[in-house]
Figure (cartoon, rainbow, N blue to C red):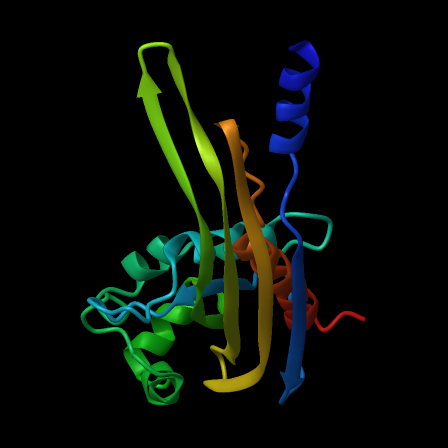
Length: 218
C-alpha cells in the first residue's frame, strides 16, 4: 500500500511531453537604452473567440522582466490606464496595420514618450485543445468509490509577436512560437493527471527570444 501511494505521487509529478519551435524575422535594428521600457499587449477585441489569453500576456511580461537580461516592462493594465482611451478593449486596434497611424498621433506619441516606451509587442494567437480520446468515470458506493478509465488530449499553442518601435511607428520584426503536447489521466481508483505544459512552454520560449531580439544581443 505504501509503495502504491508513493508511485501515485511520483507519477502525479510528471509532465506530458511538449515540443516547441520559435522562429523570427527581423526587419530593422533594435536596442534598449537605460530608462527604455516595453509593453506586451494581446488582442482584446471583445467579445471574440480570437482574443489572446490574458494569463499568456502576463506570463510573457513576467518572463521578459526577470532574469539576468531582463528588461523594464510596463504591465498591460498600467499601459491601458496611462494611454486611456486609445487601448481600451472597445477602442483598441484590432489588426497591426492600424498601429502606424495610431502611434503617429501627436497626443498619443507624447504620452508614449512620457512613459519612456521604446517597444510595443503585439501578441496574437491562442492555445487550443485539438483532440481528445478515451473516457473517465467516477462513482461513489457504500463501500467506497473511485475513478476508472484513461483520458488523453492534445493541446496546440500558436502565437505571433510583432515588435513595434514606438519612436518610429514601424515594425522591427516578428517572432512566432509554436508548442504541442499530449496530456494523460490514467485512473484506477485514483486519477493521476500527467499534464503537458504547452502554453507555459510557448510563453517561456517566446519571452526569451523577445528579450534577445529587442536588446539586439547575440
